Image 1 (cartoon, rainbow, N blue to C red):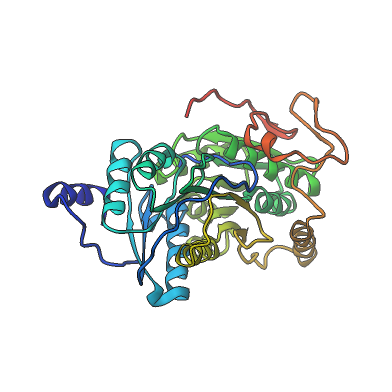
Image 2 (cartoon, rainbow, N blue to C red; image 1 turned 45 degrees about the vertical axis):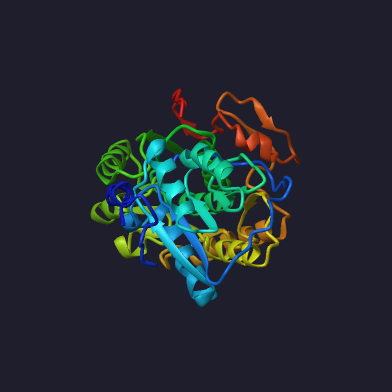
Length: 380
């Protein structure tokens, strides 16, 4: 059910919704951190779980990856849960209305999957202290509100390593949504990976100021091709960039889910979100009355992010190099932001043998060496 029909039905009915179980603006929190636990949730079987989605399920990007996680949770827990989702929910009044209606309908666990939902989530949570809320990717905790996000910078670094080996022009194009720390961190991690395998390569960034707009994403990708890019990547949600790369006979790296079906020859790999385990574990914690509010920021080791299978066009030695670095991330002996790291002006931002801490990553507003252009001012 989309947002418009949901709101229309909620207004006319004035009571619970009869929704079938069916099929962002985002920023990063600090590290896992707990606050006083909410009152115990008395759950009758099955646990009703609601999801609020920012864009359509069929975007094959951000929302699609969350819905894959929801379906994995359903397949794992089966008759222990019953899920509902509402897609295309705008921020503000619409989000508050939808979240409140899901609470009134008896959902004991509600996932709100965009930073733009943080404030309405907190507001509604105060009205329903017996209901558990989880927001992706905010950073505010209360007794019944937790937050979660993936360490995409790990996967970004790996895909940068691949791009560095696959570019011939030494120009890589990056289509970016909004100049907020989450996206800037992704661009920087990608560039550090790129220049670890190809110090001559440069990254050119175009900002589209949207999470999901296939037309604008395609136009930005074409502009980057015109500027010499022969490998493209993105921090946006549609598959338009992969499709354009396939048409132009160049390479591209997807985001959120495995986008290989949109251009098998062009697609090198994708950064993928894997929400299923977290959703399953959270539902079980609510069922067992063991849930507590935390700031979750998990990476490859915890199974929340990864890269999709690499295209066999990538030389085997490059694949082995990437897999070794991936294993180092899992073991915790490597980090995407290990020093020595300098910014565009040559100023040392991360000293040698030091690691950029989570707080500094959360507020990142500078480019590393190797990125052309400046960061536009933006108030999200």
